[in-house]
Image (tube, rainbow, N blue to C red):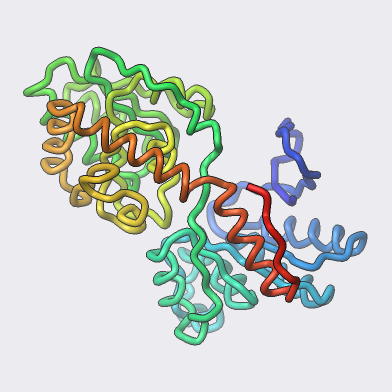
Length: 348
């Protein structure tokens, strides 16, 4: 596996495979990691013979030429909710606009040279297809992402107090502004309401100011980012997970909340309706609608037994369809098909 880290950064993940490192650059415009990943992959390809090279995002920009040189099959996974519909040369006709979207154009270039493209949702598949064109339709496969198996082991012990939890990037696309507005509405009926906002991002300071402006300081805890284990402890106590994204190509936090067995409130945006069945495994509301979000929070807190049953169904469905084992079995089958390798039983 090829990962990136900054020079001197100390990362020692436990993994059942060998990790190779590429340099990570911090740049505001072009993602220079395309070069460090390209150099690192090229070094590995000189020592090893690969049957498959599987990249994702714009970091895979040079992967196709290295795969071709090795006569390897090149897979690409797209996490992006948007793929440009024009190539780099045409985009250069509008240089200012291109500079603002240079990384998505690099991603598009990396994707269109792949023999097989993987997306995490049907929503993402349609976005990729819209960007690349109909001739790529047969090359795009949907394999939902997986969650760490430890989420299925979370033992729920909800607080007696009405506690809500959110975790994710502190960005508008995650729906944080409307979540704070909804909390203000709910607080007029449920004064004891509390919200823990876990995460970091460019808008963190703006949201802290919004919390002060709305008079929500006693009701909102913003601990920054926390480890997966710490988030699991928090969700074990929370009565409801509220994750009102404006767009998602998959929705990892929502999938994790389902796996933990928590009542989930999210939106009908992007891929989220593909992993949450409204009224069956969780609650969907209109995106960017604080009143609808507040009403849903009130309903869940007022009818907890009903929503606990939904959460149980959500956890079981996540266990079946959103585990890494399930995703791995599907991906291995695609690898075999592309390599024309006879199928063998894959261990559960």
